[in-house]
Image: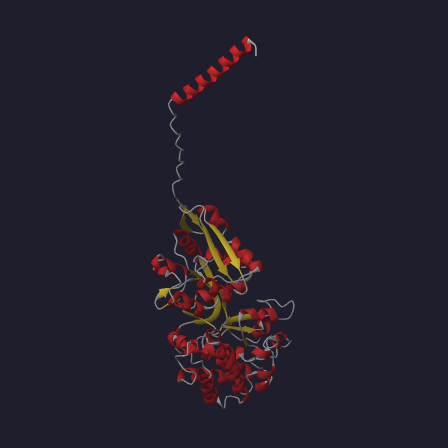
Length: 453
């Protein structure tokens, strides 16, 4: 190596060493602290006339229910404005096996934040096990009474606690009639049970047949008859007795239940009251039973059935023009205007602030707007806008529910399957076959079938 190269190598090494020493001697720079952005202050926003907090922006609330397909899409859509304004994301999951899966999820400590039930009995089971939140811990009586009739509030209670809020409902306490022919005859809508019987008698005197009744339904034959008995029970005894009856505490052979059967018998088995006579009650399919209303002239003028019976009307039949309905009148004024029906109740499994906000939203009619506008369900809320409904019929269903002094679910659906979908159905069939001559035997047999465990 030449002398010049050695000198340059030495200079380079010395420069590197000098830089290293300088770096070691230099003071260490203080770390830069991240600047935390202040979260925007929470404010109150209005959705459908009710205020909610934005304090829970970014939080997610899960809802589980049975609604699927189009109704599930509408249900999810109903949260769009709520989520946009509050920042709370709502995720709905629907499954037709809801009744089975909700049990599995709760037992597996995987309960959804909110679940919508069509079975009040199952809600009561979860409430009594301590799985559900008592909504009265954050919903005031004033708020609830501004949204629901007292009858619906009472039905949401389990042992005095508020187990849920009603999201949608259906009405069964209806009587359908051929509108044009009915009015042409000069008949008027009955306001009381006595009026209904007087109207039936007048029709017979005019040479007409009042009622069309059919309870045939393949393996489920008899169920339309149970609805009749349930409607009469609500009109002739207390709601508390109705509840005891569905729970097995009030026996079928009690005076209250026997009176309900006797009241039904006064229509079903009276000469000239039923199109085709008593035998036709057993042989006529429930879906076919309203069709004589549409004959010209009608072969009958009255048919008691739920709102879904429109699915069995002749093609092209228009509710409000060809056929209309009225509320099945009360019997004893002491029991007000009760309604037999069904629906879904939203319950709360997990108590977090954002879940409370979603539950509050579900207690408003605005949470039902999309479903109401599509005509797929009826809002039981007082603050639901009648203008949302696409038909006068749907508006009328909502009015009946909202004005109900008592609202109760189909009793046979609340009873154990061996009774509600078993001996009660077959008992009705045996009872009609004997034209009511075996009432005591039928009622005792149903009592004997009640499960002991």
